[in-house]
Image: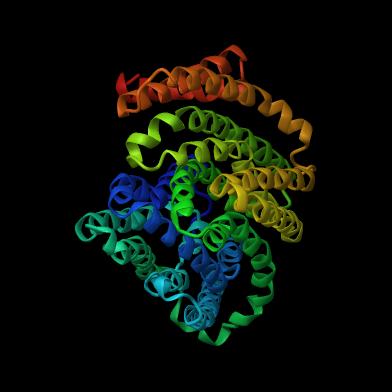
Length: 486
């Protein structure tokens, strides 16, 4: 079994993979926002937020447990084959249970949502056949990216072919969900080189159930943390319009999060390996440097989204989505810590088997999110949900920075982040004021994006940030090699 792939190569593949998960909605969003409208998008967003909970039941904690176990067993082909087969079989069982619970749930829901819920059965089945965790544990991100490219291209084509009016909302939902399942199925032929035929007698899938349930606890909290806003907006708001505005603003946040979470995704198997080897030197290094890299990107994204929101949303989504501008500006604030929270949880606490601490932070923050939503959604709608998300995200950061203090102290974090925080804030203020003088257009949005990046980079050079300068020099060297063949 191959040992360790390059972190840099896997980061590139993981970035592509994460972006592809969101690139389809962003490519098609201008078209869908005009054809389906805020109400249709809102109803889909609401029902999807509930379907995700059943998908999590289908997967339990098998994705993280599987990836962590594969990373630890990758040098023993026999043990790896048995482990992978056990996780796959257990996921089939939990998927079947989830499907049965979901069918009962559908029967209790209002008739106007029946079609949406029925089509999204595909999402639960997709969770049951997902084996991306196996290849990620082997640090083989190339194959998962390749299959997702095929799936997402199919999704884009299907949306433009079959979605022509508001009445085609079910075709839109199918076009978003079916390719994901097909992408997972494309990975299955590759299992023949990993899982042997003569291991049936050694398989005991239910011995992993306890560990997966322990991982399920923080992840159901994570899902509540991420989707409860949509769910509560759907139940509290009289129509799907507020959810539609919220969903369209959240698309940009999700895209930004995909960039920073790519760092966590590629580091997780490496961290699991070092925790297993008790290699404290490398654990400390990747903890601090990973946090620094995430903050470098996160502060730029937060400043960029805040300052560009007023220019991009009117032309991107069309008329009628102006309320999404304020929502995106509020949500952009949580980008400052959202990536770091994901890194602390998935790359440090879970690989070190401290998911119980992660659970405490997630559940306390999710509970706070629900309480704030109960008060603010009634009076402020989607804007209240945005405030709740930002506050609870920073509360979660407080929990997690305390739990990982042995590897990343608050002193380490502030020392490595102050230049990014200041540069991001100043670039956002300047670009925001420039944006007030520009009309909403593609060209002006690109000008603002360029301005934010330019100011951010110049400020970091003035700060003489060693981490940024090293990346800058490597980038210049790469260009010289590729363009000038030096």
